[in-house]
Structure formats: C-alpha cells, structure tokens
Image 1 (tube, rainbow, N blue to C red):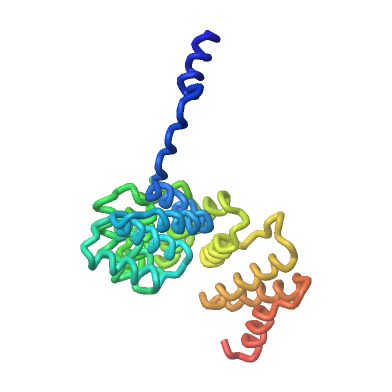
Image 2: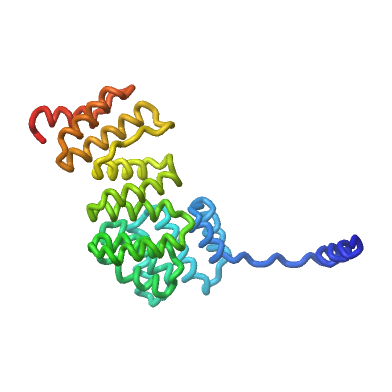
Length: 274
C-alpha cells in the first residue's frame, strides 16, 4: 500500500522533469461564482486581470461580466444600458435577460422587465434570481397566481430562501392577506433574525392582522422604540388611530433617546391633522 502511494506521488510530481504549465483560468465560470456569491472586490480584481489577458474572442463574455458586476453593485441604470446594448447586438444569453429584468424592476419599470425575465426563465429554468424578479414584476401587474407560482419556483432553486420569503410576504400584504404574510415573515425572521427589513415587514404584517408585535431578546431600547414607531405609523395608515397612538406613545416613553418620527406623528394626531 505504501509503495502504491509513493508511485502515485512520483507520477503526480515527476522528479527532474520540466514543470507542467498551469491550466488557464476559467474566467467566465469564476466571475459568475464571485458575482453570484456577492464577492464584489474579488470579482472586480478578477475582471481587471481577465481584461489584461483577454483576446478579442473574450470581449462579449467580458461585457456580460461587466454588466453583471454593475448590477451587483446596484448601479442599475448603468447595468440596464449595458444589458440592453448586449441584447441589441444580438447576444442571446439568459444572464443578460435576467440582468436587464432585475435592473428594470429596481428602476421602477416592472412592465418592461416582464419580457426579458420570461425569456430568461424559458432558456435557463434554474435561475432563481430571474424567477424571483419575475414574481415581483407579476406582483406589480397584480397577476397574483403567476407571481405565486414564480415565487414557489424561485424558492425551490435558491440557497437564500429568506429573500424569496420576504418578497412573497410583501406580495401577500399587497393582496391584503396579512395573516398569511405574518406566517411567511415568521419563517424569514427565523432565518435572518437580525435583518431590520424583514423585522419591519413582519411587524407591519402583525399590526395589519391584529396581532401585537413582540420585542426580541437582542433589541436595545432604541431599536425597540423604532419598531414601535414603525408599527404605530402602519396602524395609522390602516386607519386604526387607537392602536397607532398606543404604539407611538410607547415609542416615545420606552426609548433611551428621542424618536422624532414618533413624536411628530403623535403631534400631528393631537392637532387633528391625521
């Protein structure tokens, strides 16, 4: 057994022979991995190296990576222009359609996002980001059955289920299904208990479903006060003045520091402006 291991090592590392050439880096694969993983600094460095080493045949793939990196950095207008230019040049790639669709959703143009996102999921049915963005676009169109199906598909594919759950919860709130939304946000909160956005959406669902929000063990007095203030303003927008006043008053009295939003909302209520 020892002899076999030594022979294997000798084959792997030949003595006295010329070192084997290093395999070329698979830049397209590595860039996709870095961007999908949110590793922006690594992706930027890799893209610069790829550009320095690239031949002319690499240019289209570099352009895709450049646009995808802009999208990951939330430079949505820039990314949309780059993806559009790629499509207009005849580029057929589900990452390009997905990127354009996501950018258009973020830019507040969900209707324009539908066509590229549908192309993306038709060509690459395993792209959870495309399914998620398509679901959001369907939400804006109030195509609830289609959005629900798209969220379900995205959830089956993703390794970040909290993002899908949060968006689906917001979809249910838009449909005035606060009880169902509360259950969805509960699941999201279990996965990311420190995510302020998920917590705020969960609190809103609780208020709208007639439940009381609960203080988390890790909430400081000021964090809890901000949550109470937000809950009060949700109740106020829903027309429940009694609940709004109760939450806003607690936000003012239970905080260590001044909470201007709660104080301003209370003053407006007392002056009869709301």
